Image 1 (tube, rainbow, N blue to C red):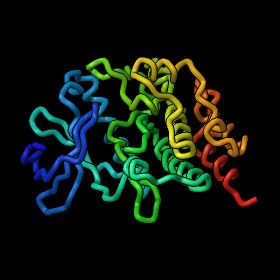
Image 2 (cartoon, one colour):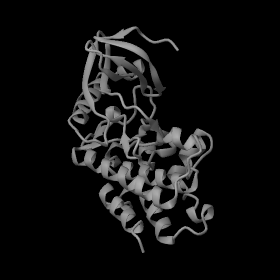
Image 3 (cartoon, rainbow, N blue to C red):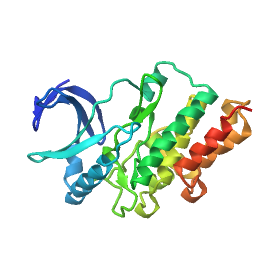
Image 4 (cartoon, rainbow, N blue to C red):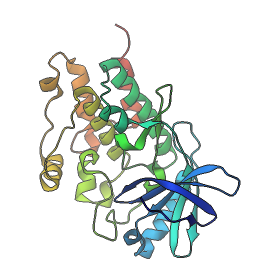
Amino acid sequence: MSHPPAIGPYRVLRQLGEGGMGVVYLAEDPAGKQLALKVPTPMLLLEPTYVRRLYREALAAAQIDHPGIARIFDVQQDRDRYYLVMAYITGRTLAETLDGGRRYSIPDSLALVSALARIVQVAHDAGIIHRDLKPGNIMLAPDGEPIVMDFGMARSINATDSLLTPTGAVAGTPGYMAPEQITADPADIGPACDIYALGVLLYELLTNSVPFSGNLATLLGSIVADPPTPLRRHLPDLPPALESACLKAMEKEPAKRYRSALEFAQTLDSLNAPA
């Protein structure tokens, strides 16, 4: 897998991953410290408004200092290329863990999503929404505690500009996107889209499946218009209150979801409390 020998003052060691929003490299600074560099795909940088927003909101996310959030240190420019300088987190992602066959019990599922919701609340309190929460963006520390990554493509809660990238794509990962992210109305985008994604994560941990699937057109249409398959069809013995909590997080209308990620976490904690 080819990669540039250097980006700015950083020596590139290898490519860590690639997605629709950019490429992430493992690099080291002149002192030998390993870091992750995220370089947005060139098409995203064609629109000056998008570049300004990327720079502004990545710097805002960089102000968040929390052990559950992978730190962004800076946004830098190398000639015509912008890139994010981020902490390099070792371990396995939740996606890798699930793909490796790990199945979470109901108590462990509730505990993990509750921890994630509390981390997300920290970002929301700082005025930042993630808008791409998914197993691949969640690293698991050796003690099992989650670390949320990729806040570099986050968005200000108060932003009112278009959610479309310069290529016309909607930012996010389809299976975890809230309906309002698909309709791409900036006025509807807020913390509730992260709460929706947390609901999808809980659904997936409990049932070993995502609530909607199919080709892209079918998937997006289902997220906007169709109810998810009830969890108790997958798990007949699942407590009804837990099913209701998960489905409330995935309500089509943002106002019908939990008022905050913290409220969702507190609900999950109460459902996970010893009888």
